[in-house]
Length: 405
Image (cartoon, rainbow, N blue to C red):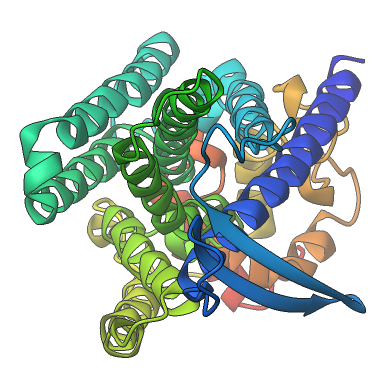
């Protein structure tokens, strides 16, 4: 029953992550758009109003004003947007633990890349998530971040790039993408709880005590909020990349991750920015999209594939394929897989068959060609040590019509 409870744990946590993430992203982008769309009030009777806007939605008309709070205008009740970010991160970390940490040997470690143990891979993951936040935050709190934002941006991108290549080198392709997204997601929630909310709280407390709030705090909080919106789409793209083997299974997956960041940040700028820069930003955005497609399409073969000595002209017998499947694939694709957390027959693929195996493999030709032969992302992190020669034999048998003996 272990797989049963594990399956439901994944289901509940994943839905929580999705729902809270939608709420967080929606409110964040709404307020970012609102700030860009606000107009200065025409009436001279609103000295405390910084901007105003009329909107229509769902049959209702709304007048929105952005004000500088004073002791005289301080409302009795303020609506805060903070728990969406917190629960998105908590549920995301729970998913990281369920899907990766509890199954590190299968999901995080690619034996063809590194000799890390499961414990070492987890230490590397946790350490990177924590250390990179302090590097990023310390940078933007320093003189460089306050006076030289362009240089701070370049350094921040170099931190992200370094993490991308680090993860791609030590982790499986799937884990590398997820961990870079988790790293940036950690930065985002820490921005909210460590920098944005405390700044807002200080302004509110000062106003309620009859003091003039330090409006510089508003600018600092706004800067981190802007950072968050630029990181949002890249993080989403990295999370979804796990459904596309040509991205995480590519030998240049670190480059693909960086292109996702450029493209996602560009999309954000085009959507939210109201100045003319959103037009010229279309050029690098489109260029990164084309580079992303091209790079994902140019899959390099693994190092071992070019040294294969199998005879490409031989007729591959089904008994050979059956033996490979039994040793390398039935480990997971069975009613009772060796790794119980996967549940029975992962992805609906059952291969522990006494009859009809050849027909079943033939029906899965496209998937096998993509996952086993081209991108080599199956088995996950090559947990069953499927050899390059064995992959080629499977591909050769499929190309010969997948005939049973």
